[in-house]
Length: 351
Image 1 (cartoon, rainbow, N blue to C red):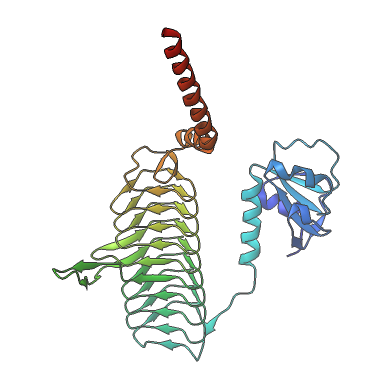
Image 2 (image 1 turned 45 degrees about the vertical axis):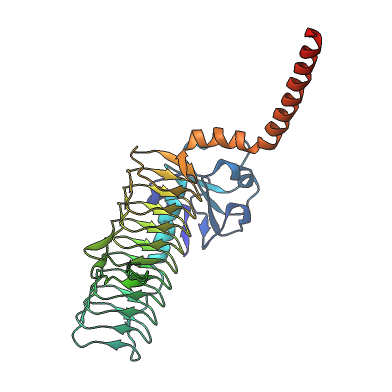
């Protein structure tokens, strides 16, 4: 990567302040800047670094007002973070791309393969599989029978996709992801033995879904477990059978979604959130880290936290009291003593 400020500004439709010929060949955090590096400033708490960073070019929001002189060339844009991400995507797209099918891969004769594929060593592709154009499949991936994979999707090493599952266009599955393992379905008999309930459904990932390392998405008992377009899952998340996650919802690491739960569009969930089974979460809901949700959240755009979770403002008020419980307890004990003392004094005065 070797670009001038002029080229970057034209790509981002930004405005240059400084030297338009300033050039960069690397990227760096603003606090770790070095000559020839591109950085960005989006969070105001990092503003102090812009005055002494050694980065050559810095992307800033167009309304940024510096308090001191800045040596670096600035490029002003509507949203510095989004602009920087767009540049990183451009860089990623221009990196050398793997291609070809390894002789060590086992590909069924009945599989339908698209153009410009990469299939790495020790990958297994089952019967009736359909793979679109420009797909990257890294080593040791398993793709079961009758799986469908859209174009420009990436499966990193060790991904497992069980039979009959569908993966859309532009999806990214990181190392160790398992799609379509059996849902946790067991029926107790009269002797309290748990008999397995066959899981006959599948998993559907719509377009532009990204799933982090070692996350699992279970197949449905019947029908489909569905992740709608644009869903982003972090590492180490468990999605149970028959769950549906709405468009552009984002879930952080170590969260667990119980069976048949429906999550709306544009929701945000912090790490280690737990959702009970057979509940519904409205669109735009934000759930704080480690929250436990046992019932429906009907209010769109609600912000909740706690276990069991409730409205965020109420949670903060309750937490402020909870933190002071030892102090409040001591005050109550002191008040009880004062009341007893006053009562004894009152009884003495009436005699």
